[in-house]
Image (cartoon, rainbow, N blue to C red; front, side):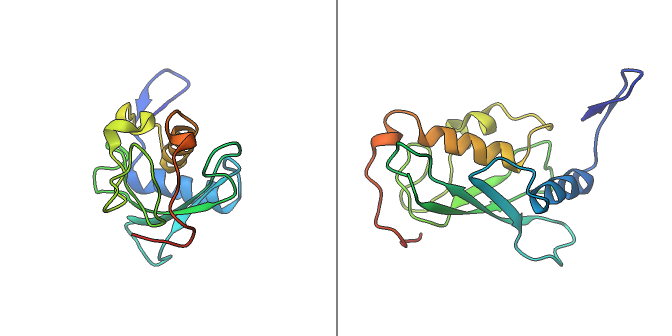
Length: 146
């Protein structure tokens, strides 16, 4: 959703929003410590994405790279993407058996608005890594996946 100079609200179509996010990611304009992109460049619906989070310093995640699978449903960006960790992780917002992120426990997903995006979700997950008790929670051995 964007506002014009006259104050009108314009709802940006799903594919335009996703193309904008893809371009931003490919140009490296995003937040350091985060990465994301399409799994298949031929995915015309731009539904399936890979994501990555570099663990924040001063936490048990420090120095580790966490891979995520991101699905943007048909109603995106009206609804948040569905996110699942591929790399095994111990976090209060992640199902310990499947790696699925509980959207009610991630601020950017819980308080979603259509101006948010994939990077917003990844950044919010990285911030959750820094909260107590997550920052001190022991992590599985590196290289393990769900």
